[in-house]
Image (cartoon, rainbow, N blue to C red):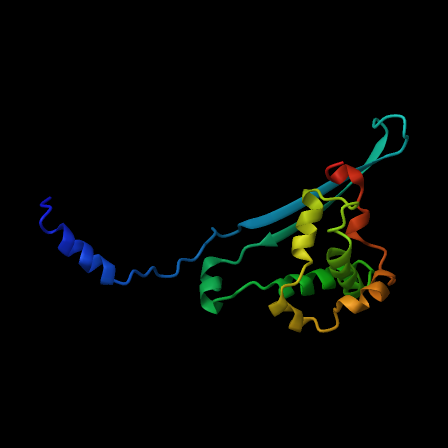
Length: 168
């Protein structure tokens, strides 16, 4: 390499616009993502030998690469909420009330120092917190309505998850 041309090459690189095309993440056919949470409650306070366990698993099948390219589909958080609401309705709960209760719990309770602050609670707070640009999709969710929503008829709440599922 000759160093006489170095200044000329450097000047040319300063004016050149660099671009990188869009790259898509593609999964092989039949791929899926799964999330599993397990918990345990002790029956006797003497030791943890006698306990009952419970678990929850969610599967999300990734779309086929051809189908994804055809529809150029984007996955929004509101799609997840809609499917979660439908799943809760199917199990006999009021899906909308449970979602709203989760949002209000994420807004009000999780950041308090006396609350749990482990990984599971942080993950649920991340899922159930709304950015400003997402709030117009759920106009019925307002912070001033949270006291009414928290006392709704939904028995589920992620702030009362067993302490064995997270950092103690």
